[in-house]
Length: 204
Length: 188
Image 1 (cartoon, rainbow over the protein chains, first blue to last red):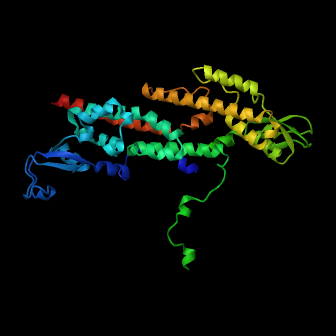
Image 2: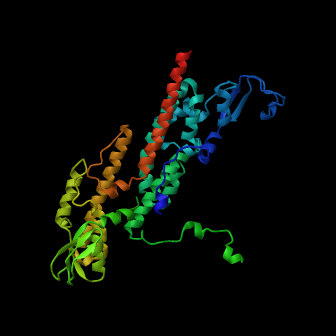
Image 3: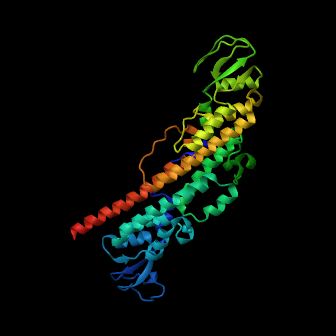
């Protein structure tokens, strides 16, 4: 229990699965140069090469690499980060269902910053303001609601918010357990009860 | 920190007991305890007091602040005040919890005290929540946690530090991209 309650907060790294999933989201791109022998990437095209001006949705990691120095493609923001959705988020961020909008909203947003061009400042501000505005309700629900209520609340949160939410839940549960004087009872570890592999002692 | 760890720290708080046995001084690592004389009140650490009480070796004396009138006063003060008021004991909830669960018959008006302490806790936690929300909205960079007790601070940990870590990380990368934007502009 004590080990589970304390860990450093999330920070993206090369091996972070969250980061990999976030950079896998699609970004609309337009090719500025002809890409030879890459026609198979565009199933509707049918030609051998990708012509200048072809519009394709590329994963964020690829788009970033192609757009940065050699400027093979030019990128647009995905629709979640465009003007219309920005207005919705500005109106009342706390009510938006971020999970359906974009499950890795903040992480993807940060990766898009260098691609956004002149819109970068607005995008950066949008990310910070959205999290700031949503933080209060996340804190209140994660630290105070009952178990069955928590599930429904959680479904509207993006992945980053969800991990924060679960952190809060752990504190809440720990405190409830302590209040009912059951915190000192040693229970079987989850790993042991869910152990599906054959045990060496059973085999031999 | 876990609640149990804070409970462990709180158990070092002194409590007065009336022993029903006589014993010499006990020499413990944390300090000397006793001597115990039957019928004479003596101050000992809470953990030892509870242990002796469970073995029926003493009677616990309620701390001075654990009194219906005093607690009602504190509760009213807490309700009126906009800031946190000074608590009579750093670990008031834990001490109450421990004393009431191990020796409810030694504390006069145990039920009332339990409700009062719970009320004070709830008042302070809701105050903490609203001030944290205000802090987030006001984009503050630091806050003083005067008069908050350890268990109260722990109730928003590690959620709050983590949340601010994320907020800081996002605003840093947003700011960073702004900077590179302006340097690019200069180059053009």
